[in-house]
Image (cartoon, rainbow over all chains, first blue to last red; front, top):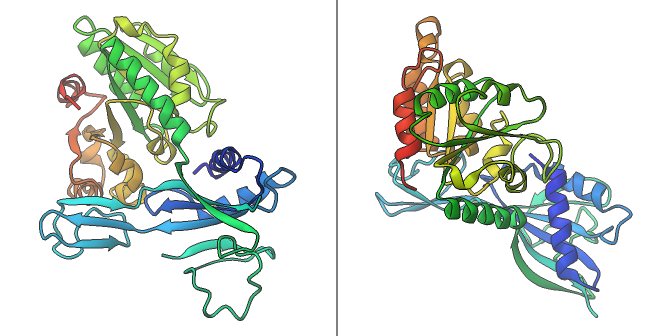
Length: 112
Length: 256
């Protein structure tokens, strides 16, 4: 999708939260329903941060599986495909529990 | 779930956090795994938080003006603008309608919508968060200043033709709809699940062509149901006008 501009948004968040400290790493959580290509994001991150205060700040991508709860049979299942069907009973009364995350989860900051 | 990361030598891979079998490569560049001299600080901030903040502002503007707003999306050439000319012809005089027309370039679509009594504002998406292939909340807000929002009953945002990016951006709308043309093939909901899942309603357009196509409508509807069981489906033809009345009813009548 927009890996470069996503990296810009991530960088802005890192800078905001890091303050005077050096950010050694940033962890982003991305749900499988998001249209983000991890390799492209990593590539853009390296490119974007080179020569800036964030150079060397490692990007770690934590992928979050798609998990649904079925209102029909009550089962909680993770999905391999983005099909909103309960793998246990094949019902369609499913509610998404995770898979749409798109967050800066945490930062590794130098000790002051 | 696997953690994807990249090493200094350019290789990238996924694994869980434990590193138990970590004998074949240098572990030095693994962020987050107890680096000395650093502390991990929880942030939990949405990457789209700035877009969503502006979307909430837009939503407040719509509420203050008493205008219902629908975000209309599709692939290029599915028939959004043709459907809208029919829509305006049918609703003009009964409702005060505004169109926010998003296009990467040209005013061709905006020009096509002139003359139906609607207020039309064009947003060419050359600048803004994310570039050129969708409308985001900031771009929509910039276009709103060129519409008489307080005088409108209904605002239709015609997004950039694209089945990927527009689905990711909330712009403050009350409902999302998409136009899908039967010439696009039955498998599109499976290939673009984020878009087909994001919308409340799918207008299945160009149904007048069905006798001339190998298109399997039942298969398409089954695929759509698999990714979005709750979508409202309206079969239509922006060429003959079939289904436009049902579309207009959904457009103005649905409360979300």
